[in-house]
Amino acid sequence: MFKNISILLFVCLCNSCVRQDKTQSARNLIIEHFKLLNEHNLKDLAKEYSKNVFVVSPDCRSLGGAEPIIRYYQLAFTYCKNTRFNVHEIIANDSVVVVKYDIMGEKLTRPPTQTNFYPSGISVRECTVFKIKNNKIVDEDTYTNDSYYQG
Image (cartoon, rainbow, N blue to C red; front, side, top):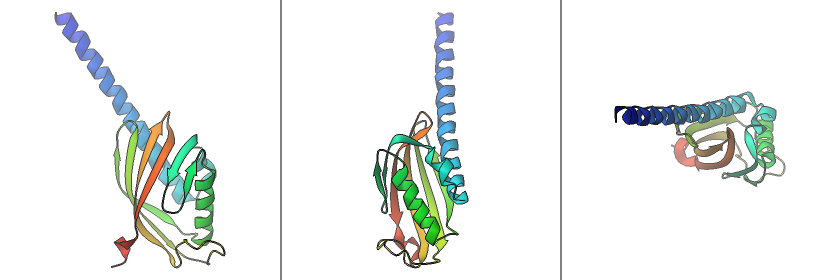
């Protein structure tokens, strides 16, 4: 009986360690994600997405690849070169990471074709829910609070 309890305890501890490792791995992926965003390193950022990623945000929608979200960031960084992502909070488990952050950037020029782009720069509070599988982002849903900085 004592042997069975010992084995059960060992299995539970191992499962707990594996779950903690997955949680830390998911958290590290998203920490790296925001580091790459702040460096404006889109080449390495694209590698963090699965090839069938689904992205939904107020400014971008993508199904089946990182290309649309990378194009969006290229445009954003072209017109707001000093854009910064200031992370306030990260909540993670083994397959879902929620991040609350601010995006700040001063407008340098007006985009010629984008009508929904921030006209005077950007200062918004956002929250993104990332789903992680095999250490890749497979789903990204972003929610924006534009009024957070409007007084």
